[in-house]
Length: 124
Image (cartoon, rainbow, N blue to C red; front, side, top):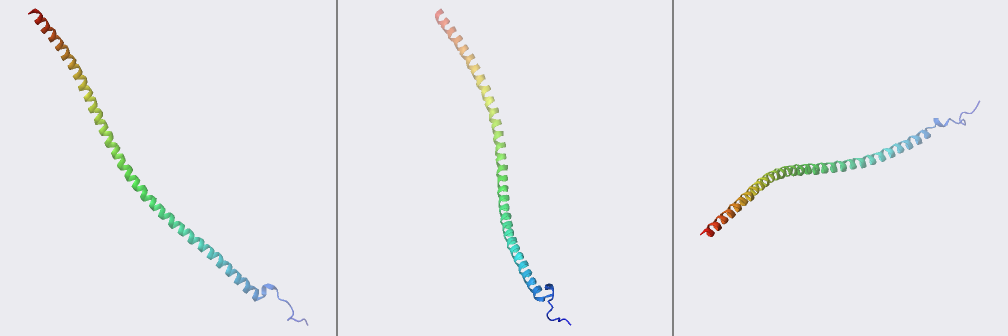
């Protein structure tokens, strides 16, 4: 009869091998989970920072839009004032042209009056 005590069992039936495999697997899973959780925490911090930067940029954008709106109103006001000034300038030019013509007519009339006075004095 063969001895069963000396017969080796296949390695996968040994409980100690399964214990070692389980412990190594548990440490491996824990290591990867901890590594992923640290990376996840870093990503969450980065996401929080980016959200804060985004909020600050949105506030800055709102301020710039308000300033742009104010500047657009100023431009419209200045364009209206410029239009009024152009109209006033055209009226002044028209008035000056009329006054130059009137002064020319007065000068002509004055010269004629001097000629009449000179001829009257010469006759007397």
